[in-house]
Length: 262
Length: 161
Image (cartoon, rainbow over all chains, first blue to last red; front, top):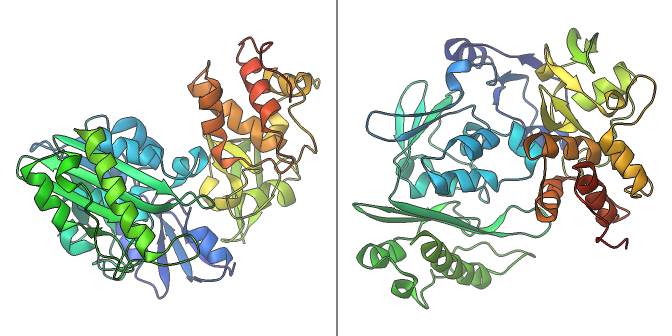
């Protein structure tokens, strides 16, 4: 990879300032960014590690009961520490492998918004609030297509607030080589209704399957969505699976998730 | 270039690093600790697993500068100073847990990470924990057996294959 300057600030304010220089890039755990840089698909002039910022680490419960996860919290720490939201803890425990989970961060994953990543499905299905150094963004407004988010240049994802559902489950059908989600479905049941978010399937990145949400909000059982699948238009088609295959998997995995959560 | 300092296998060590210097590269080329292997350099194979502040990470996907001030444990620090192998290393030897040996440093470090968190894992838990460690000789069976043996479990009923 091309060389760059490295900074590891200890406060959000210092990180924002360090990210002000041209072509500077925030670094979470580096489990996606460093391989990308090795392939010279990215060549920032400066990396600003967010791992030294203690106020962006850890998990807590807000006054309204939401689970608050600091942006620099590793997948391993969410897997071990998000007991209040078991569906989310299980999602974190299934990302990559143990060494990757030890380094990778929730903020890094959500800022990158890989179309096959797990966290976008968890955040969107939860109607999470994505907190940055300047504002709060609702998950419904945050995800804007493959590798695209509402984050501005230099804006840092400092915390994610997850309303804790009554029941939830994440089902991932792994692409056998990369173990990324070929399709992943997160189902979350709240008092106000059910939310279903799908990763890995769409060319537009993570999306809500509203048809299933409507059916499940009336009857939270796999029967309510029997034989249902989203249309194959706009689904990813590649050597790992056709668009029709992915659309079919969305239906299957949603039913599995509902059965596991109910 | 700037100077990076970390505690490696209990000893404070320093060396020059660029921003882009990987921890694996720093250990191997700057500190001369070539026991940490680089198999794929894409964080798939796990041959480069070391412990940073007590946690297993892939040294090829971490910058040397990120480990500034950290405590790093590598395969070189596993045996006693007189060369006596630790329980895991001895179990790998006893149960033929290596063939070409290239993946072994990462296997040992990942296994040590597992046994620290889960001292008596099941076979399924061992296999799951080694998801990010690839043995190109496909010698997984005896690797798993060695780890179970090192955890003090009876492996006599597990056939050698």
